[in-house]
Length: 154
Image 1 (cartoon, rainbow, N blue to C red):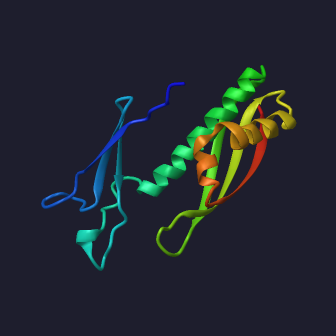
Image 2: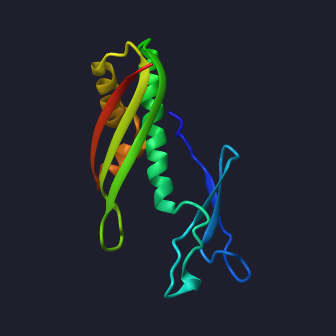
């Protein structure tokens, strides 16, 4: 069985003469670019960012939301449900000390469609978190993950 490889190169863009001392650009194996930056540090500006892009841990959270929303839409479509929209709002808490891992994550899904049974949405979310979303399954090793959803008739 072949291994699934995911590649990414992250390059520091900070340094003398740049707007942010802690800026980074990630180029993914699929050829896309994502910028990241650190939070400003008033006490030590040379160690902080300039708030020009998301923080690295925010991108981890965003990637997890994208992973699970992808699953939910795909599962509903495969079930021949008339899904027309899906968003997920993630709120999280992190540990106070290093490594500041996520300790709690709540995901609130808003699924829009026609005639989609609530049980189908609940099942799709559960399948994503129990079987398919590698990001949330990974984060579930350190964080208590909870979910909720609302169903909007379109």
